[in-house]
Image: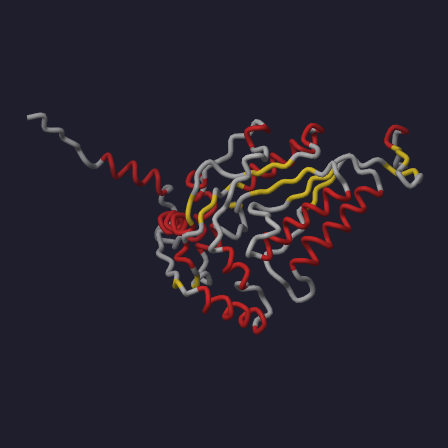
Length: 280
């Protein structure tokens, strides 16, 4: 059966060429650290520039650029600096760009819950006191879908974060409670861990921990009060403690695998005790 398009699907680009009209696109390109063939600047700035130029050239209706929380050109973290420059590049080339800055995300195959539950996450810095509002990846995905269908979100900046602020140590405690295990984390000073991370990344072929990730452990999430949020999209974000069982049950040993979530166990334990109030 031949493939056909309505005449309304054809548009004339700014260069005068007829093309099939594209409703919209998203840029979620990013890396957490320099890799062998690309560094943060290559991906977050030059990569975004190429995508934005293609969006402008071919008259894409909507362009949503997923950046990061704490995107700041003056940040001590190169990750946050390059994310900020990527935002500027996207808006300079395609002013209608929608900027999205998600908080640290949790979900399947994330680098938050699964990293804390894994056996390789041993060395940390700043005593895991970095604070942020973790956000469910499903909520972020729903927000992106709404933005793509709603033209009023064009040229807007959204910061998407969860309802409760946590430190990494507090989330690690949630992970230990849900997996019924205690993961040991060894705290090292930044002056030691940053050069050690550089050496490890050069010696090993798989990513372990970068010096910039160590730097980010000392930077709390800052909320831009001028940016729009989930509330503007009619979304109520999920709280991380209500979903830890869903994502972490697989880390339990076989002896505890079928036990209920930590919150349900705690409620059952409370019923075992009779609280007597003596008014005398």
